[in-house]
Amino acid sequence: MNYENILSGCVQNMKPSGIRRFFDLAATMDDVISLGVGEPDFSTPWSIRKEAIDVLEKKKIVYTANAGLAQLREEVAAYLEKKIHVKYNPEHEIVITVGGSEAIDIAVRGVVNPGDEVLIIEPSFVCYAPIVQMAGGVPVPIATKQQNHFKLTAQELREKITEKTKLLVLPFPNNPTGAIMTREDLEPIAEVLRDTDIMVLSDEIYSEMTYGRKHCSITELDGMQERTILVNGFSKAFAMTGWRLGYLCAPEPVARQLVKIHQYIIMSSPTVSQYAAITALKECEHDVERMVKEYNIRRRYLVEAFNRIGMTCFSPEGAFYVFPSIQCTGMTSEEFCEKLLEEERVAVVPGNAFGESGEGFVRVSYAYSLRHLMEAVSRITRFLEKHGGNHE
Image 1 (spheres, rainbow, N blue to C red):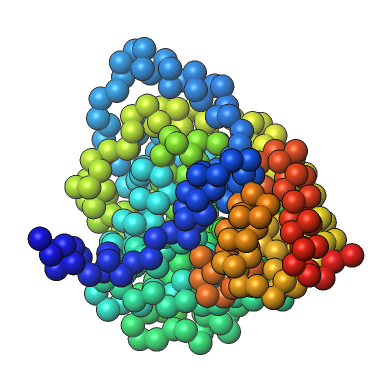
Image 2: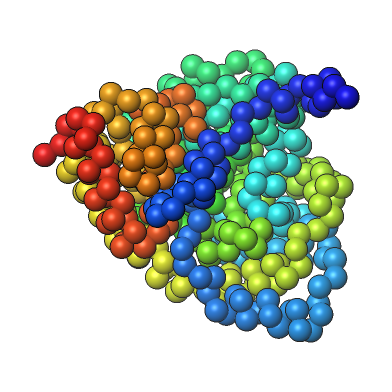
C-alpha cells in the first residue's frame, strides 16, 4: 500500500515536537540531567491523591455530564472570581476538558474556518500552529523580542491583523520564555481588539506561577471577557500533569458550540480526576504557594548562574522556564543542544522549537531540584569553556 497517498498531507507535513525529540533522545543515554520537559517534580498534594483513592474505592467512576461535574464547574467559577475577579456561569460558560491541550484544540476548531488567520505569539508552546493547521486555518506568527522581555506590543499586533484574522493566541505567562503581561501591557492590546470581531484564546495554564506580582487575565479588562476563550488547568499549579484535566471558559454562545466538539471526541473528562480537582481547588492553595516559593528560589539561581557564565538571560516573571541566549557560542540552538547532550549529558530544548524567533536561545525548565540544576550549570559551564563561550 502507498501510505503517502492514504495519510493526510497536513499530518505528514507536520514536524514532530521539538520538545519531545530531545526528551526521547536523552532517555536512551545514561547519566543525563534532563531539563527539557515542563513537568513539576513535586508529588501531587496528598489530599488530592486521597480523594482519588476514595473515589475509586466507592466506585464513583461512571461518565459525568459532557461539560463536567456540576460541582467542579462551580468550584472553577468560584476560583476564577477569587483570582481574576471575573464571573462565569458554571452551567453554561465552563467546559471541563482533558488537559489544557484539549481545551486549546476545541477552541481553535470551534472558531476557525478554512483560510482564517490565527495570530500566534512566538516564541510559544509548540501545539498552537499545528492545531490551527489541522483546523484548516493559517498560523501567522508574531515574533516577540528579548529586549522587550518577549511581551506582545500593540504595534506588533496591528501590523499582523488583516481582514482574514479570526483569533489571537495570547499565551501568558509564557512557555518557553517565562514572560508575563501586566495590566499595563494588556490594555493597549485590548484597545486594538475592542472594535474588531477578533477572538482571543488566552492560555493561562501558568497563571499561579508568577514571581513578584499577581497574574492579570485579559478577561479582567473592559469588553474583553465577551471576546475571550480562557484556557487553564490543573497540570502545572497542582502538579497534576498525568491526571489530564483542564477547562475552558467562554461566553455562552461560544461555549455551547465548543462543548459539542468535546461531546463527540471525548464525551467526558476522567471522572476520578474531576473529583480530585474539586479537592485541589478547595483545599490546596497553600500547597501551590509552597511549590511556587520553591520555584522562585530555583528561578533566581538559574538567572544569576546563566548571566555569570555568559548566557545572557532576562529574569522571567512567570511559569517555570528560563530562556537564556546561546549566541556567545556561535552555534545554532539545535547544534548547542545536540552537542551539550552528547558531550555533557544535559538535555535542554532548542529555542527554535518554539518558533523561528526562538533561534539563538534554549529553554531550560526549573521544575527540577536545586541539586540537579546546580550540577547542570556545572556541566554547562564546562561545555562553554570547551567551546569558547564569552564568560567570566
